Image 1 (cartoon, rainbow, N blue to C red):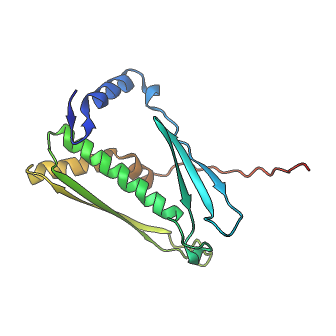
Image 2: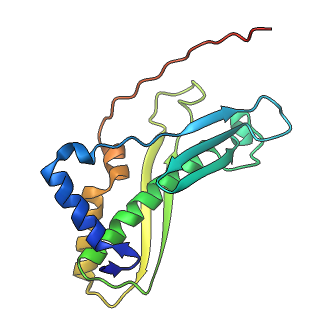
Image 3: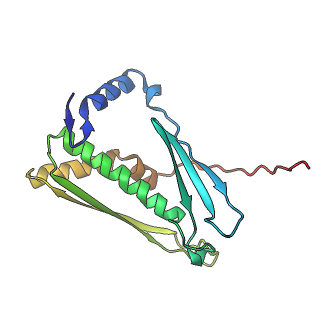
Length: 179
C-alpha cells in the first residue's frame, strides 16, 4: 500500500479507475442534520453528520451581533473549517501523488465577509473573498509545490462550490403536535 503524507494513493487510484469505468460511482450525497434549541440557556443548535465510520455532533451558536450568545462556533466558522480542510486535503493529495514528502504542514483559511445583506441593509455580496495559506515544510522544488497548489485549486470540491453556481433549494414543512 502506497501511503505518502497520510494519503492512501492506492485507494485513490482504485477509486479513480472505478469512477472512470462507471461515472455513477462518483456521485455521492453528504448529509447534515440540525436540531434547533429553543431553550436560551444553551447553544442555538446542534448539527450532526454521519460519515463512513461514525458520526460527529457539533454545538453551534450564532455570534452575539447575529442574535446568538457567541458561546460556540458560528455557522460560518463551520463553513471555513470545511473549506479549509477540503482544500488542504486536496493539496496534500496532489503533492503526495507528485512524490512530494511533507515533514509538516499548517494551513489557515480566512473568509472575508460583508454582512450588510444578512441584515437587509445592503446588496453587497456577503462573502467578499476566501484565502487559504499553506505552510509546508518540504525539500521539494518550489515549482512542484506550486503545481500541486494549482492542481488543488482545479480539483478541490470546496473551491468548485465557491467558484461555480450551484442550484440551491429549500422548503419548510409545518408540523402540528397533537395533544
